[in-house]
Image (cartoon, rainbow, N blue to C red; front, side):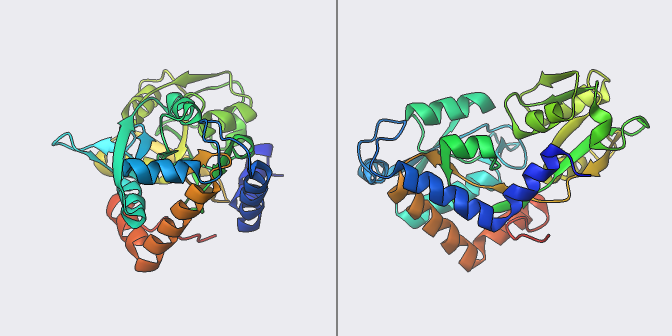
Length: 279
């Protein structure tokens, strides 16, 4: 029997469910002020066009989504997707880096126009934010040390200690399986080191993030023991009621998809195309 977390992921992976969530949140907020203080439906779009740029929040340290390369340049899948969205809208882009939980606080306060950081749609987030169309489909991997024989499924997490970004989707999933504690981290390297050192029994992360880590650290004594069956949707969260801005973001994403640019960016950073639903 599937657990609550897996059932939630299945529901959110269903495209009709996403359309319903987006439709309901957009209609319910029509004609009202957004959390960032915009007074009309076209408020944020007008502001973006007036200032000539989109302000995009991201962590900047979670490869291969957003990170700094050897030259300390901000790069990653989401960096390039955000640049593409801005380009299609005819404006520039400004990236602001911060800790995971602070990204949403900044979006709420109107400091950022959107977040691009591998954000997955959840029922809780859909109650507070509107979402773009999906531009990525990922699965959650359960990762442990190579010599761990006690954890072979998500159900084995009960009473264990995991490590993840605080307030992340993965923390929520871990807690739904009854973990004893979740240790907060800021980077993917910290996450894996917590497991390798034995401070944490396991971590839950996007499968593509784990695969990327292992491609860089092929000798790391880690293994994937389980993975969710159904894909999660990666979308851009936007303040509620900003329908005109959200529609422009959707148009830009679909244009990048039609050009094959989304797929090209994905293959470059992940080694595979996560922009197309495969299950």
